[in-house]
Image 1 (tube, rainbow, N blue to C red):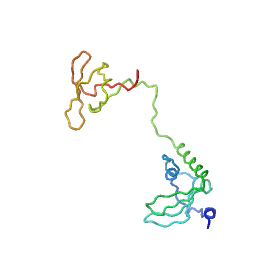
Image 2: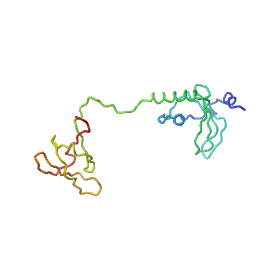
Image 3: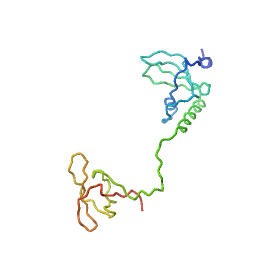
Image 4: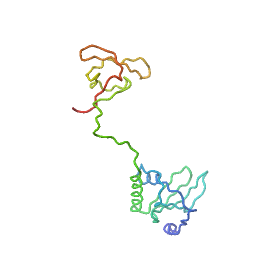
Length: 185
């Protein structure tokens, strides 16, 4: 029997329908971020199947909007499902639909106010985190780091010996210092 005859005569009953894994199809079509989606345009029906350990595997036919687009084979439970597309245009149609699922999904992101004034510096917690001592301030005055004082073997030291603008040296907690952003002035 020809493949086209099989897909045209396939049993499309709910008993023969299989779950569509949109994430897996998306990955097959070069999309890494397609969610597993509850959708109704892509359908999948068994051409032939068998039981492998605790899962059904075999040959499936895929349709979008009731149009046949691909078949797949999965020979064992731990085997990958391999897709075979009927043509590039149909694969592209499925891909575009899957991209729309990704775009329709509500983004769960944090939005910042780009006009918010966040100052000109940041804090760190441990003296081992210091990468650059060129832009260090204490009480809004530029200071020089002379030594990272170590008192633990775990990299959780917090004391720093600094030189103040008047030339005096002082031990401070790294949390009292501010580090300037890496921006040009």
